[in-house]
Image (tube, rainbow, N blue to C red; front, side):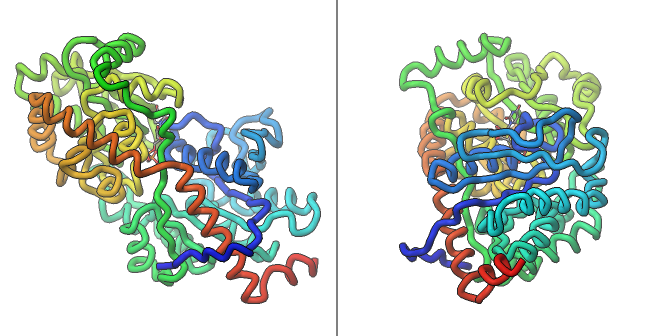
Length: 436
Ligand code: UDP
């Protein structure tokens, strides 16, 4: 895998065009198409700007009346590109709007002085398709982060989830072949890029996502119980008994239904003391969790909370005895990291990035497979053992401390520098950008 150059003399990129076609960094995460990628783009952009790199984020306008540009933070500009109808366009229909989106991106750049951007960073394959053209037009390198990969997703489909179409696989292959640098969230994602998509090893760099350790912090030592009760009161959750929280988009891939089934399988004495808090909104096909809870006879156990903003989320994690992440696949799993940073142990499926985000037996427990009986067994054991939970809570805080957005942004900047130097040393860039 690529080693990042540490040449001090290399000029930083001054301006980066970040592409996020299908979801806006200004959207509330945890519902619809907005999730970890949105949080990632926001957190990294703010820190790059603090390091002196201006970031302009291009995203599709999904409401009429949106301003053409919004200053999200000093040095971070969000550009709304009109491409297709504002509302009612599903993610699956976006490939037909990529020409319109690309046109908007190229026009925005053409209105600036030549050589405005030094680099394009595309997120998700739809943006990669746009980035690939922008790169050639502007004579700058393309850095691409896939976030999820169709070939990987199709191997671990949830029941009733539709496989990703061939067109996406081809689209991903094209972007991976064209990108100057590929950023993977974990070593396993790096291997998938290399083994499943034929990415050259020297173009792939692992940059782990982070967590805002100032916001997602544990209660002070000795005050954990009081903080838990206060958080529960603020959220309207019972202050007695156990709370298991699920935080994320409600969709088959995230598998919150497994938790309802597991709740039904808890021993009756424990079930009477448990509240399962499901936090988030529907995404894609969604799931009828209220119907399932009624069918399973656990409607009284489940509480649904709407998507919460970043300010409210630490309360959710602190209110919970356990946070459960039963996904069929996660390229990383920011929720797991945020929960641990707040001192809450995580029970997660042993898949994808969750194997990095959770340290099995130290900061939480990784569960093989999605059998609700097994999930009920693991959760019962942890709920019945407060000392074990306290030990895992300590491990969770320590584990989460190893990740920070500052580190993510610094590592990305190193990748950017490397991409710019590599590109220029090949003789590209300057000539193309000035030849227009
Ligand atoms: N999230 C949020 N409010 C909610 C639910 C989720 O802000 O009500 C955020 C959560 O804090 C996390 C992101 O959405 O940062 C989800 O990221 P993750 O990597 O866990 O899953 P993804 O959505 O990328 O599949």
